[in-house]
Image (cartoon, rainbow, N blue to C red):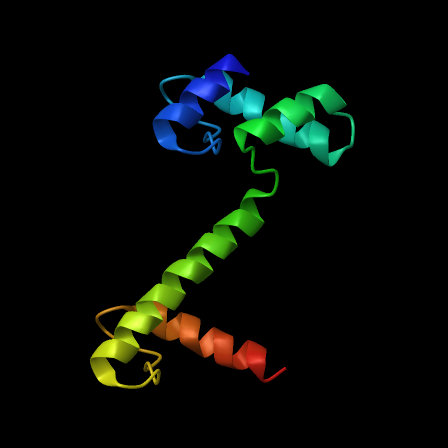
Length: 110
């Protein structure tokens, strides 16, 4: 847990990549902790300590939330510049924004 705390202090999160070059064993260890947690076999005291460090158990959900917030900020900037949120699907300066807005509209229409 000490190595993870040091990583968190340096990087601001506990999202150690599996192939973290400076310490590959740390990335593998974090991955094992997530797997144990997913199987409900992680010791409760270890889980508590990892939670205190800010361990993100579901990286996909966290990544999706971060990307959503980023795109929402980009949309606000677009709106400030253009006066609307009608981002074209093929918006050349930021194609990902156009695709994201299109997906949000599709999700809203379901």
